[in-house]
Length: 209
Image: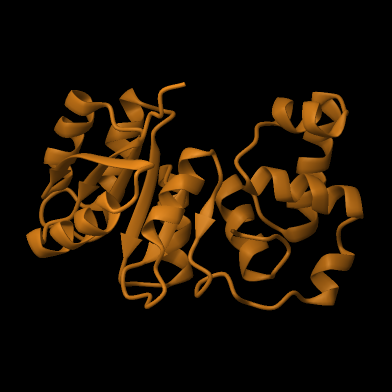
């Protein structure tokens, strides 16, 4: 069986950063950098041309920034797997990136940044958030708000599964999963999936990696 590497598009307005990441990724036989872009506008164009499996997107660029580029790309490619790279760890920015459609958020400044691993996890459908952001310890009070089954459903929601996929995984009906999801959100006081994911990570309710 022929090995097909994961195709990657690197988006960053600094050529030196792109070059460094390219060298890092080219050492991995499972990955293939098929293109680069220096702006959000160029990223949108390159995605249409190259159809990469994973897009590594800088958050702050002149012109169209990372968030706007993610939203634009997902209008035509709702299944796009995008990893956002940022210098900022503020919860609001992470939540905005996930709400825009990013499947991961890692810090460019992290000394132990394993970009190749993060790309592979996102390609596999997982959600990746830098441990430095999601390292808040679990609070007993938060956990006791949810039943063991609800914590199980919460983990799968944060892994990016739909209600139907969760239903198949747990042997439940999709309606039952929907009820669990509604109760989880109500118990934790959140109203959107992106907020739910961030809340779960900030309070140690799930394993983010």
